[in-house]
Length: 147
Image 1 (spheres, one colour):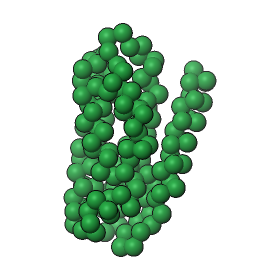
Image 2 (cartoon, one colour; image 1 turned 180 degrees about the vertical axis):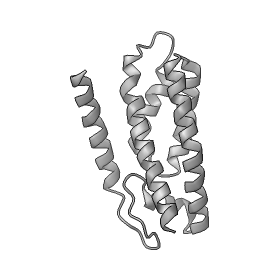
Image 3 (tube, one colour; image 1 turned 45 degrees about the vertical axis):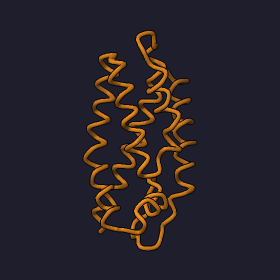
């Protein structure tokens, strides 16, 4: 258990550090993000602040539901739902520049899970997805509250 937690912590820390390299403030955004990559969001929006807020609001309402679906599918060994939810999350997180951070974990859940999957093999990817997405939700909520 300790080895698994240490491995998870190292994986998560390395990935979150990757995100922090690109989360420097950008002009017109009065908030410093911890996980979300604002440059990607700004490029996607073409500088349309209203569109950015809509994306962030949708993210904060949609992702908690998707995370709950992911956890429920995992708890019930529903591999079809787990793969489907992971696939949906890939699209959702891409809008905020989180693909680079979560691609491996989401890909593993989407492509390499099934009836013969050892549930222990998906613990770490699911925990990683939960932590990164919850941090991104906090980022989005912090930004929306600062506007």
